[in-house]
Length: 300
Image 1 (cartoon, helix red, strand yellow):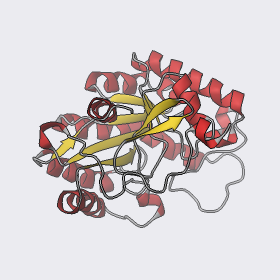
Image 2: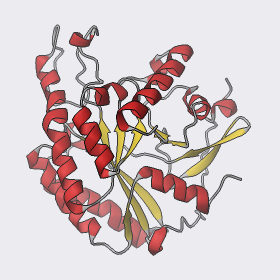
Image 3: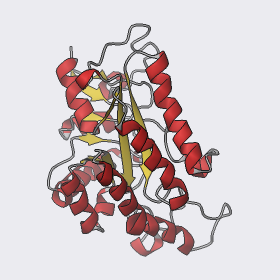
Image 4: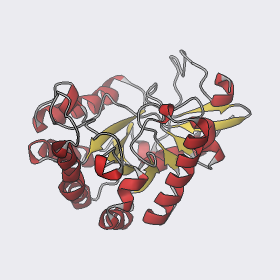
């Protein structure tokens, strides 16, 4: 498969000095989308037949653990048992929408959380059958995992996912496979602050870029320590766009097992309050951004 057939031709220009006006609803200057990455229960774990325990994005030992890592498993469990519900209360109390990047196998293990997502009206995007790197799968296995994930999420949530985000590393085949599977958009890019269309052979796919920069992974990797740090960091991102840029979108990634601990979560609560009362900010779901863009800027 060539880069053009895969929708992976490298574009170093993008919108350049004249980005399009998104025409966000009600004259908003910045569209903000919070994404809860629901992964707990989809990670590699010895009880699920894997060779080793997953330790990615946990706060466990830096040294390798021989055999089953019960501590890391417990950190994932916190996200599903406690963290999700803290985030659910925070967004629900403020009547703010958000998006879920969902691992299909994780949703299967917590029907009550699935019901809460449905009741809240959150959009649930595909994030994989398991929490795995698609670039490590062969082509036939990847296609099958996308099919199974799509069917599973449709069953647990009640509607099939409109969007998709691969765990960090998609394969060269992923984008074309998502089009084959009927996805409206994917978020497998980090290269812009606005959605854009990309050629995938003779077809077009809408890309709604994601961000690992404005993401709570910085609590476990890159130096954000307190809820106050998080509040300032996210507020600065929004304020920069408001003061310096033409209208943009910002994606803020959350994890149940990371930001939902009390010492961090209060910073999220404060930023939600700040954003909810800001007249130039549109806090919205990812699918709403995608569908708005298709109406305002349809594919050429």
